Length: 437
Ligand code: ATP
Ligand code: MG
Image (cartoon, rainbow, N blue to C red; front, side):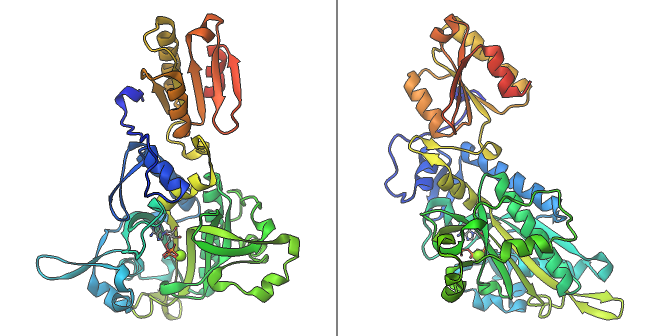
């Protein structure tokens, strides 16, 4: 992408309304634009990152055996009356009437709808286990939308729903999501700690929140320090036997404020006690027959009818952009992990109009594209300092800097955004590094 043909409306001023660094940086880099309280337009740079995060989430869901579908944003109120949640959900639910005065709502979550789909289509226990997921916009009329995409009213969520014949099978499904979540967040460069959590309005008895530690997090959390640096289990696991991984990760103390037990926490060795703030990026629940019973989601079993056991598993896809920036930035801007960076690399032309610089930049741009790199070519005519600042601000991991001085010696400069490391080397050598050739 040539910057001259891209749409990157950077802001010079730091927006006054933004209280936390991720919100400030997302506005300054032109990733998002607020259209109403808690409702954002995703501008090209932000949309690219959102899509990359979504793709990682989809891949790890599929690897764990979940199958993707897409449910609508609008739902019938009557469906929610079946579970009893239409009245319970309160003011967070956006209620709408269509032209026939039919009561509808903009879905804040999809347990009812997926249960309706299941009961209308699945008849036999032989089709279980089943895990269906989608990535869809949700609306919750939050009392205090704030911190940009962290607590929006309209936000993108991945939600998965599992169906099993009994509790033991449902716990296996739960464990699959548990491991998939650890791998998902690790791929985005995040250290997410699973913590015992309150089940809230969704209800049920087994639940973990996945928390990123950050001073700006909205929740107070308490955990054993060793959990923070425990590496993700990885994908080379036996997906039918994950109980030992679940136990390894849940035997150490970790709880959100609602579930915190000060006496149990006091038994953690003092130098291992961590009490901090955190951002909830995912939440998994096992809730048994909470929806399947009132909504009659029943399959034929070998010895008669079985009411299915369900779980639901959410990831805040749009919130993750904020969480990643909170975890990875410096005074100059965002430091994107390579896996979610909007561009893999930037080519920075220090003197546009100089024949030698233009030719070298065009060569680099073409070669990187040919190698499949997502590359941003800074072909604008601002001063070098402004070019460096903007590429650092938007956090491009690898920056290939090409200027007349270096070229006179046959060299270019290759800068790593995360480490700050700079190498001076011939263009061909720089391209070989960037393309892995
Ligand atoms: P919170 O406690 O932060 O209000 P929640 O527990 O109500 O969230 P869940 O119903 O568990 O949220 O939703 C699944 C995931 O969706 C959460 O883990 C979070 O990452 C994300 N999420 C929830 N509410 C919002 C919001 N208002 N804006 C952005 N992401 C959200
Ligand atoms: Mg939650």
